[in-house]
Length: 400
Image (tube, rainbow, N blue to C red; front, top):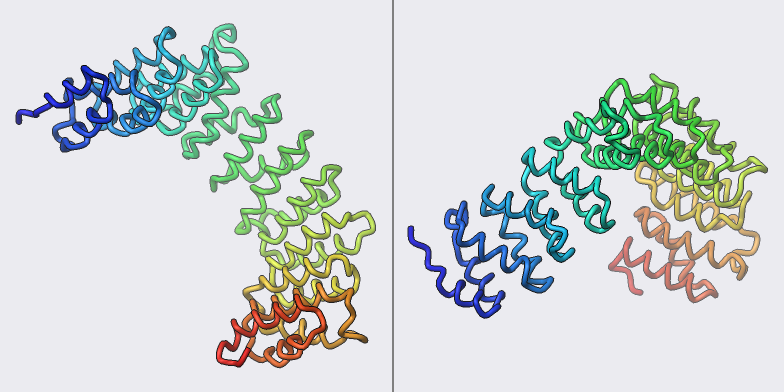
């Protein structure tokens, strides 16, 4: 089929790249495939157009097929070309899962000549995915260490960790003890996404890593394996990290316990709340975790927080309101607590009444309407507003 490209060619001669793009857009996919004339026009736009035009033509070039690969490789490897042009070339190459593309992108990264260009090449390799794994794995244990630097190894690990394919498990396991804590963190995060029997013991071992970021990553990864909680005694392994010297590790552990579906988690979190060594930030994480667990035992613990830690009462009420398992039970306890005030109109408790009103609206128990009607007469305007909003959710036909 003869393709009429004269308008595009004429537009290219005067640098009107928008018309060139419009003409190419009008072509069917079959007309684009392996079309040298279109490729030539597209490359002109890519190297001479403005950023928006480059972005637009970059979406079309992959449709031309493999004839685009070598010109793109030439563009990317031409150090005399503008950096932005090479940036787009590397980005487009991510659409071609071919050995020569992988080799070229790895070489480009190893040159480490520009951080932005390197980042684009890494993103392209990540997009290529599994075809890049073999080339990257070769960089983990090179025959000649002088040929492959520590930076090359780090680059390979970082990309393998992003690919998230089962073929990366073996090479990542081999380097899980890399000296760089940032790389160990990436490796643990990546391995945590796979259900492979070799991985949980390695994650457990990383709970004692010297780097807090690695310990945190291991905690998160293990907490997502609730299916193995009982078999591997994960609560036993995670519990000591509630007292970790790093607060981020402690918080991640508290939240992680909620995901284990272990009935003992409530008792452990209760101990954490009561411990004089716990900060309020850590207690807030425990409160959130108990809300995620959402059993009656967990809700009971949260109700107890209202009296034990008044400053955390609003957070506890919000956590209670998010339960999906025991909404009726939770709403009943909140109404009981609301009515237990010696002086229910105390101004210092207005924030508590406000959060209870909002929680009752979220929990959806129609039997709590009388309590909300009472709160509509509260002396605090914010409490009244939240009570009316909750009533609108539960009983929209009632007069407001």
